[in-house]
Amino acid sequence: MKIEVLGTGCAKCKTLYEHTVTAVANSGKEAEVVKVEDIPSIMKYGVMSTPALVIDGKVAFSGKVASIIEIMALL
Image (cartoon, rainbow, N blue to C red; front, side, top):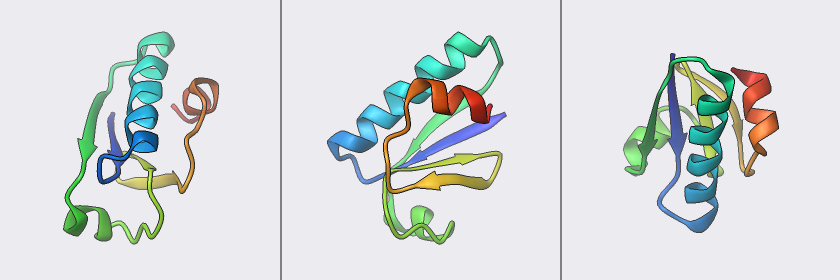
């Protein structure tokens, strides 16, 4: 599983990344979690509001910081 956290480096983006790493660790599933900060890469997903979470190439949500529990439910 590949999980991408889209954002330009703001505080909310960093928080979402931390929540995502924690959610993956707590779920026991194997996943690669990467930060995507360059605007052209973010735009290819059609995301207009960051932070956003992409799981296996599909945008799960954008424009909010999800809780660890919300992210675990998506895994």
